[in-house]
Length: 66
Length: 239
View 1 (cartoon, rainbow over the protein chains, first blue to last red):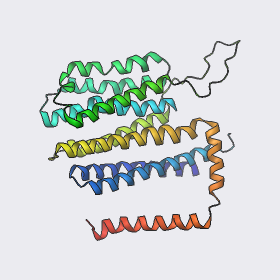
View 2: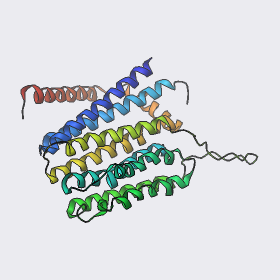
View 3: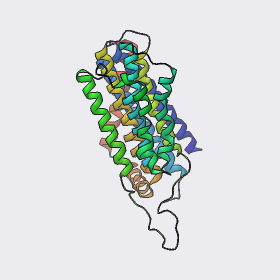
View 4: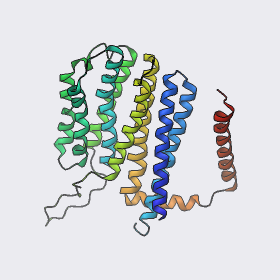
């Protein structure tokens, strides 16, 4: 159960990061580079957070396996 | 782990070599690309799952790279001087060369910990999966999604200057590389596929459960500041 919740949250974070990247692309295309960079940083942070949650899901799923 | 890395690198490489020049040329240079042309551009993405399975090395080392040739031959304008001129074209070519080098390095890199082969058994030294690993498929999906997110911003129905488009696509390639290669192909694949990395990660988690008071306050403070900045950005409209 915990594993499924963590995977769901990780998937949500990955979807959110794609949304942030889409927003940053729009901002870069409008030559608003500062806002674009800030959104890219937020997107990369979401990727990192999603991967951490996915790693925790792997650990919780394989509890007892070395 | 190797298959995950190959999925990410392959998706980025085809995007840089075929998809982006074709979109660029169709948008700003008026290059005519029909349905057959787009089908040849999509061909490497169809061959990629067979290459990353690893059952036949010749597909990864020859078949997948050669699958780019039909598009390059059918659409000779993709390698035209007009598409790759200037500093933007130079950076694009360097990115293509670097990604292609990374593909072959990962393909030819020896397995990190292959088990000892049994003298009485003719089985391969390490297990070869017949199916594409779900992690490799997820990596392919996230790389294509991130590339598409930046792609639609540039090639949507709006007027975008070529310089801004170059910057957008470059940032998109870096973001796709980070997410696919560094995050999925590195950190996640390590924990999912390598038992020793899993043990190390579990040990680091045990240590992190006892944070010092200073690091806890610092983390809470940084999170609060970040939330306030985001709220100010969207609600007060600092722009």
